[in-house]
Image (tube, rainbow, N blue to C red; front, side, top):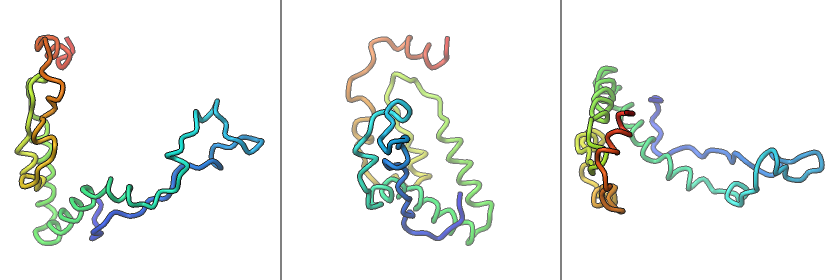
Length: 138
């Protein structure tokens, strides 16, 4: 938790360019850095970075405000409750919904595609026993 009152995520600088992967002749060194990717070479305007970090920034703002209003114990307790609830044991082959974590995160009033599909796009697995053995590493 970074204590800040930032409402929107910061713009993060571009991480890769052709200058970073250039060899001695000024060309891209494919053997050392892999194939060139247009996605890393195009200039991003920061909007994608802001969308990727939106939930984290909003959560950080809420926890900082909670700390200032009620003290350090309130966000620590909330983070502890989130960690406890997120580690729920379940059958790996069955669909799961963690409504407890959604309530603690404040996402209980929003609808996401995961709320409807629950990871069951391809159907249930054929053998639940194999899934349990994978989970328990037997």
